[in-house]
Image 1: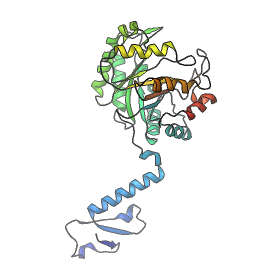
Image 2 (image 1 turned 45 degrees about the vertical axis):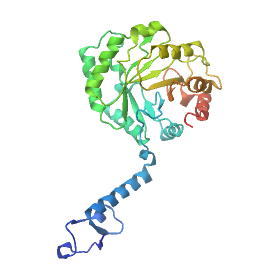
Image 3 (image 1 turned 90 degrees about the horizontal axis):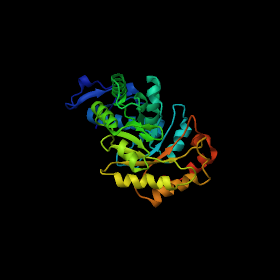
Image 4 (image 1 turned 135 degrees about the vertical axis):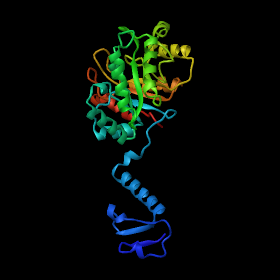
Length: 320
């Protein structure tokens, strides 16, 4: 490689080979004011320089975002106002996925900011879209299909998007979302974006729940949850038992733990989060993918706002 002074006159140069297309490195910030004669080598050096600058100013951006097959750790309800220090704490604890339940209600500018925030910390985003659909109906209207299609089309190419979250608790005390409807929405999503997985949250704990409202044709990834009152008991055992008996296919599964206090639940005991983790991930080995509900909640009080739960989260060995 020949390195020449910036005053070198290439028009008079007889020794340069056919690659002598001199790149003015110094014009884009080369502190040594030199030109590099070989274009191929110069591109490599510029790439190394760009990578160094990226690591210097944006150190967390170098982390790869999670992929299917990795250990997935999701923090539910991370909002746009989450600080960098909060994101760093989550990152240190192994969180590699985040979610915001009302993202479809936001302006495009705010959605963009949220995706960029997640991307900056090497996290993927579970894009919750079920608010675009009337989950009480047996089928979606034309307008619901269209607004869902438009939202997916608008954001599917952003590098932080990890999955589309289409349904949450399709069967509970006040709601039944029939399996056929869930399958229709799955087809809609995959028709617009065949690359990202469809993700649903399921809390069925009886055979009847599965009979009306569960279909393995409606998702690519499944979240299981049945929130404890204090520590795991019969309901959590039934969550696992009925899922294992009903499962017919292979796909990624996540189990979400209760990490909040609220009016319908007694406060988590001092070791409540640890007890849940031990039950679902030590005593049972269905999956290693962990969800935590949640960071900042509106009706309930999440990890960020309850010191006892924040302490438990910091002490929890999610990733060894």
